[in-house]
Image (cartoon, rainbow, N blue to C red; front, side, top):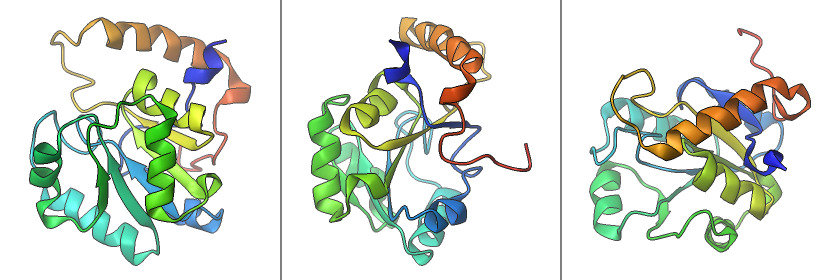
Amino acid sequence: MLEKFYPYEYVEDVFTIDYAKLYGMGYRAIIFDIDNTLVPHGADSTDPIEELFRNIHAAGFKTLLLSNNNEKRILRFKKEIDTLYISEAEKPSPDAFLKAASLLQTDKNRIVVVGDQLFTDIYGANKAGMASILVKYIGYYKKEWKGYTRYLEKVVLFLYSLNKKCQHRLYTNESE
């Protein structure tokens, strides 16, 4: 029942993803959420994120930003990043993820979705039949109010941690 919310992988952040391994496995496109995945909520892009996108593109990946934010927010974020995007995506609707696959001109089985929320990014990817990587949301270790959804996510992630067959479905990072 809860497996529909389980990511294929759960990692610290976008910088700990093994992109070379994903490419070697045949993945050719990556769909990223923005807020709390790449940068803190509402923040502009940073030099390390821009360099990450340059490196991902140089490795041969296509990228797309899939966000429930409006176009103005996305354009402000991607000012220095050459990537496709879909605004007001209405995640977790699988329609947005499938539209992203069409824009990327890539089969959905060769796309990985990276996001920070189980109930939008991961659930939507799973409903669309795409591999998913959950990153700890930026601010994960802060003691500030996070909203009810984050507490529900903690329960689902605890159950995920007990279900070994659903973990490491993409790869195992040997350095862990």
